[in-house]
Image (tube, rainbow over all chains, first blue to last red; front, side, top):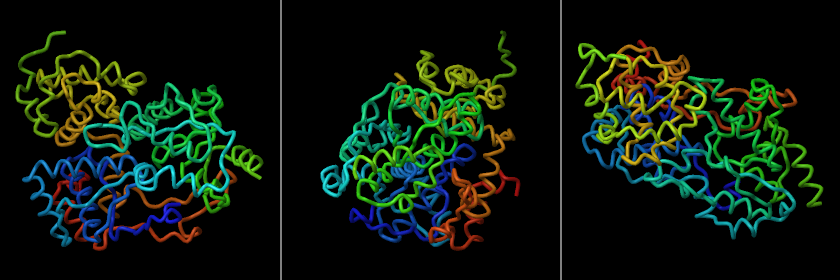
Length: 269
Length: 170
């Protein structure tokens, strides 16, 4: 979607895991893995756009840590040298909500929308690491974020604020406490169903995985129907720009999105 | 419960704060972290208790606690902490120290660590099976293959230097 809005996307050559999950095992390994990706990006003279909230936070945390700890920076650079890399700290890290809201802007999005999404009502899910820790400069206000809602509004759709809006998707303990992790995601899905929203909207792939791909497992665990249409924001944007379902990967959502898409198509036909 | 002085490591909180920062020492046990914890509602995690025990020096008990691994690192507690303790970062520091002491982390962590060491990614790219039971690979969408370290040998060598190789038992 971004190239259609004049954002050029370039692959970071040689990139690997951001390191976030390994921070639990070893702080230096995490710092190295994250700094390595930052250094590769710097090398290519690019801004970085990590799509996952966790990757984005990792990049921001390490950038901050190496700015304030010269000894650690040298230590990491000594390890990076084996691949001929060096981290200077000049790379700019952007979040997709910032790119959509601050760089492209709701005005431009309103202008590219050829089929407004009238009559549908969505709930926004930012994901923890898009908002916290606030002192690291997250893409939106940690207590009352509004950028994702503003972006939903720019599509002509309705959004509402709900009590569980800032709650976690549960992915953080998927590895260590699988059932609790599913229950946390499930609690949010159940509330959204009873609140009468047409769908949930996020930008983070890890949150998306919990709410969309794990939906069936959540329902089975809770012994309840937790099915609920869950979308990437860019999928809704694409629909409003007249792109077809396959181009937007809507056949890959595991949640029941068809009905919402049909409702949209009927209203905008 | 009597806490035996012979079982305390009075230097433990210094070890923790070398990774997490000094703020942890100023915890005054208000319990806001445990009160805001979305994981603790369902799991055994009580961050206030863990921090109290760590400050007291109950190293063995803290590091062997499965609750350490039940923190979602969501930072809700950190936003509310009146003493400015970054509790998730304290939990990560404690996990690091537990691993150093030979505690075996939940299996998924070791799997991801091995995969990163061998390929640069936490897991190989997976095919997607849709809700209509169709299977798709990256290829079927003409997506480029997943980027990875250009020289796997040099990358693995770097991960030996950070200590990851030792952690995965290489």
